Each structure stands twice: as structure tokens, then as C-alpha cells.
Length: 156
Image (cartoon, rainbow, N blue to C red; front, top):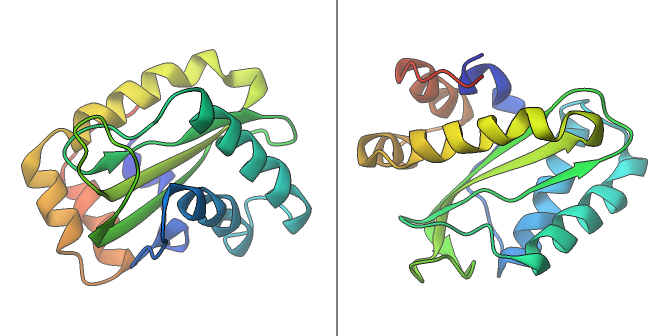
């Protein structure tokens, strides 16, 4: 499955606006509701799971990338959210750079192990400078998804 199959335009938040990583996590928890991926009643538990995971160890990587993720009960399929913040958001990344590209993953607890490879594939995709630059230059959510599709990177 392509990353562009996981991230549809209604799951893209751009520009992603947040004062810090905690506000980013709250946004990631809310976006799937507008996309019909889960009900409003799940937002608090998703946000709590993302916060708990983030407190255990930062999901901020290098090159302005963050991949916050958490496994939760109550969903059957992986939900991915793409947030693009050209200005950057403080996220305690490994290299200290602000997060400009955030991919949030809400993983069904029953499929947690199956998605470890998904995390690795996303990190590999976003390690490419060309991909990061093109995503941040996207004019809208549809263009961001088209960029992902054009890169032809497979996520299994």
C-alpha cells in the first residue's frame, strides 16, 4: 500500500498550526473525525494515547520530521494524518530542528506489531530531501497527496 493511499486530502492539515508538540498531538487526534475515520467520542482517548507515547520518548526525528504514533482500542484500520508546517513547530526532535512535516499514526492495538514496518517505511520516505521539499511546497492538501503518489514509495 502506498503512503498516499493512507493519507487522503481530508487527512491533511495544512498549514499545521500549533504552539508546541502537545497542540500538534491534539490536532492529530481531531483530524480523523472530520474525515469520518472515527467518532468525536474517541478524540480524548486517542490524544491521551499519543501524549503517553510521546512522554515515554520523543517521536521527533531529524530534518524537521515527527512521526507521533499510538496504538489504541476501538479502531480496525490504521489512520494516518499528515501535517505540514513550513514555519516549523517546537517538537524536541533528535536534531533540535522544529518539526515541519508531521505524520501521525493511530494504530489499532490488535495490529500494532504489523505497523512497525509502516513506521520504518514512512521514516525512510521522509529521509529524502526531495520528498520533504516537495511536500512543504504543496499548495493544498490534494497537491500534498499527489506528491506522495508521485514518489511511488510503497508502505507495507
